[in-house]
View 1 (cartoon, rainbow, N blue to C red):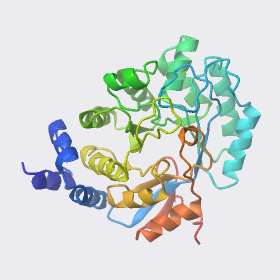
View 2: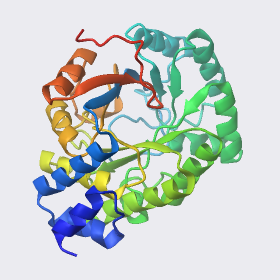
View 3: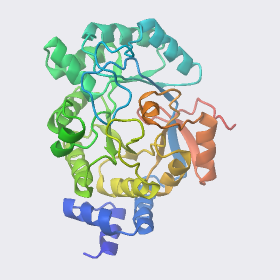
Length: 360
């Protein structure tokens, strides 16, 4: 098929093969690729609504035994700069966020082997009791696997206990690129691709919705980016448990891995291909934290229907060298400036008509 025919097929919801995905990624002119992705987005959501969530990320510990080379946040066990927040400190940060309208709380940190599952159960139970209006969208797959290892428990039991304590959904963090060659190079101690997919399968089987992410721009090839999308698409065919796909690019400035930051054009290309290749994912999120707010605004014309979150506080990407921040008002003004209507949602894409817009 010609490139124009491939783009037309994908824009109307037709499924691309792996080889076709690689081809449009490599060969399609960017604006034609973006036009097809935007057409698909508008076919799925024929309104001017663009959603976002009021959220925060509380990085409760930087102690980690995984030691990823792309991470400037972690500190090894016993390091003088290592920290772990008390439960009271975490609850202070939750209150800080909820006082500013947050409904989604992401509690996420390093894989700290000193923390037992009871530590998380007690914390989540307190958050649920003291802040019943928030959704605990927390812990990466690496943290779940770390807990299972420390406790010598099956993944399903760990997830069940955390769910019963108050965890409502699982973020897609820790996927990076779901290709073994890449994992061995950038995060050799991290969970293997099949393990990551397995945890997501178990979580979704237990009724925990999850997101999926892709951290691109380190050492992976074009083909490996499509392979990452492909295995996610296969699991989504099986389980239908992913709510959204969130690609974001690696910030190299203060990390051991170093390297070169991805370009804005590369970011837009990844977004557009994601919308077209992941035909069974409902939502595509513009992760503005690394490329910045202006690129996040452009993303709304390259397949994205969601602007992500306000991210009231966050430390991991900040420590790698990103300085991007946003207020609710800024996100809404960007959405309005692009010709769309900002709509507040919760973690599960339920629209929050009860929350006034910041620009009102």
